[in-house]
Length: 256
Picture 1: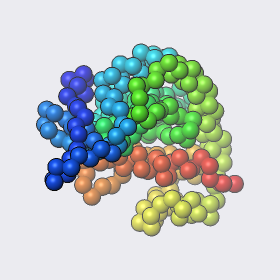
Picture 2 (picture 1 turned 60 degrees about the vertical axis):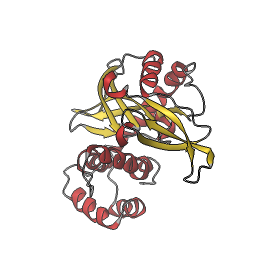
Picture 3 (picture 1 turned 180 degrees about the horizontal axis):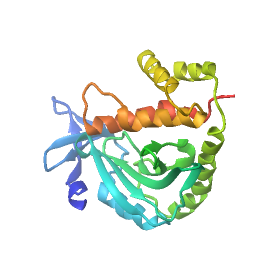
Picture 4 (picture 1 turned 90 degrees about the horizontal axis):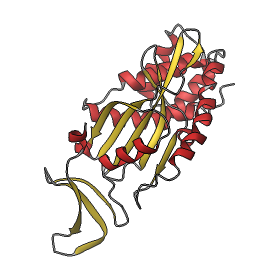
């Protein structure tokens, strides 16, 4: 894993084709390929992927078992996924188990802050489950050294809040939304083509509860997002967009 993320990266000054120095921005360059990973502001602080993992692995106060590492945009974006065996899974309803984990992230192009989020996984069909960012994400801008001093405290504060949000899933399993509410949500958060596709798909689902609707959306997000250019890193970024625009608003929508 270290060999995957330990490629050399440096900050480089920018200048125009006329030789004028650009003082308000700089380039982040992968020097083994001379690829420009990002153009960032002058105050951006380069924090290397390996340093992020080392620091957060050392300070997040629970057992972490690395399961996979994903790099996007030629290495500009990092996602590292960890299982957390000491965070007890919950049973939303009989036989429907959700386990928890941690995802560490970083970027060299300003697209992501640096930090980590608590994540969940539905074991029944390996859906990635998302909770509101305000409860799940602990991060900072790239404007200074990675502040690890209060990671343990923040993690300990967020876990109960995260689990409280996750407990909504049990309530959702006992509530059936009406068709008008579903149509209203889809109209606000989906394009016309996807709205029609997912409306038909949910009508065919056995579980017509709000939990069933949520799982249909997270299954689509995890396994079936369609791209014009299908590749792994584009899919991961498309999932981020779907999380922000569809999954996260699901929690705050007035379903009743």
